[in-house]
Image (cartoon, rainbow, N blue to C red; front, side, top):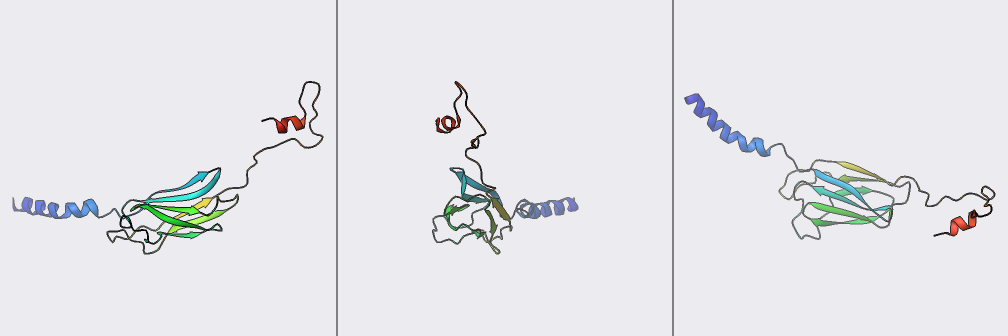
Length: 150
């Protein structure tokens, strides 16, 4: 009986620690946003509040290494958005990483993570046959007519 009481007391003390002990703040969402066919924004969402609500001076949680400049802003205490100055041109590769020593609003260390945004290569918006490669016959439009049809 005495052993059972000791076991129950130990369970009451250990249960809250076990419930909250292993869940450190971390990134739950990291995604590029595409507008007009180019990557223009990168959004990061954390599992816990990182900054107090409404603090426009809060520091960036990301270290950005990219050929295209930009600036970031907090949307809410958990969501940070990095806006590129222009859409990333083809072949551009950017790395965004959580800053070392980043802490949540509650003071817990945030897991370090790194993300790569690759704009890929250039894309062809139209492919037209070269000179002398296509000849229209009677009733078949020629190359100029194809290129001009909308």
